[in-house]
Length: 452
Ligand SMILES: Cc1ncc(C[n+]2csc(CCOP(=O)(O)OP(=O)(O)O)c2C)c(N)n1
Image (cartoon, rainbow, N blue to C red; front, side):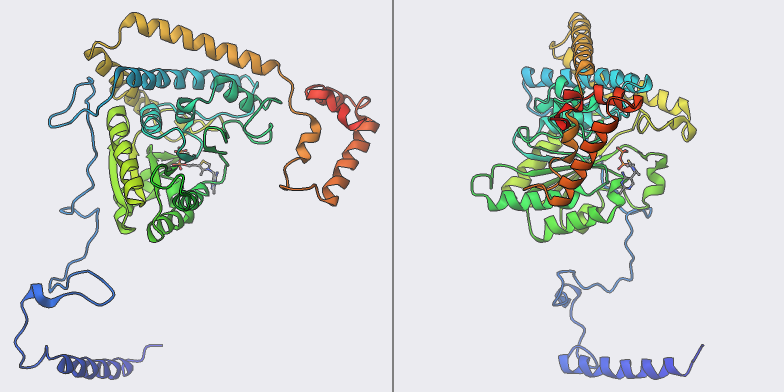
């Protein structure tokens, strides 16, 4: 109900209180107005006092947008004023090889899924520079917590094609998770790559915790950082905010790498946020921030290298937003032409291809030739094909493995009970019921470990 009488009464009380306080401080009434710069700030903030009634909004015209850092243009030539990062031939070629390998591997695994030979796959098409340029700028023992579209950086660290294939086919040699997770959920303790999980953004606050552990470890403080990758869609999760707030208030060497590829499945980034991308959120948390052209591998490399240096030297969080375009479908469960025109995708592939851009740079330095390109593509295709054929022949893990590692210590009684129940069922039906008979054959030991 509207009660107009209350408003004047309240206002009156406020006015008299304000004037009492002002008189006591000697700034009102007959006291001359202090010059603006001497007005200072409030005790709980360092914000200067202003007499201007002005609202800030990073998307308003006239306000500054965060620029996008770029080093080379579409022809692989340095843009005006750009400083090409120091990079020797061996490193440049290693980066390029991985940029060529990634889509070859992706195409093969994508097709294997289409043929029903693996259950799921997710490609990195179009994001080769963002993923490999950033991965190459890290130390091999920085702790990485990834989303799922960063396998290029893992390959760069030394994850082999066999490791990839064994995970995707869920063979008994799957070192990531013994066949327990969906394809593309890689992990490697040896390579400091924390195992990927499906729930988006959960790795972001975890990374702040990993950064904290590094800071507390005298052997790693000042030497390593925690690195977390996530998409612009995942950055809408509450966990993004928890992670940034944590890493900035309890300062930790945590490097946040946002891959802004324009889409979160069918949701375009224009429907994901209204502000100036992900980068604009960094300064809000007091975090050093840079936005970079994610199709320019040299810009990504230089930005992440410097971000990492600041992160470690200052022991504080840094945010890098790489701007790319997801050229592939979201995953094998998605047909992206249902929500974006095929022509838009074809145009992007043709007009701004990160691999071609870097190849032109290498050629301009005399580091690469057409013959080398042909030989490389052939070798990588052969290696990928050989690796998937090896994995496809291997049995799946022993059936018993499904009960392992639910708990870190001893297996609890109720899990043992379930294990015994399955054992009984396999004894009874394993060799008589056709669907079980054929399924058990796929596993190492064919379920016989249950019968002994
Ligand atoms: C908490 C949670 N919500 C929803 C999903 C379903 N999901 C999987 S991927 C995805 C889109 C993520 O987009 P983005 O973070 O931009 O990364 P991109 O796939 O573009 O690389 C969604 C909604 C999920 N896995 N976890």
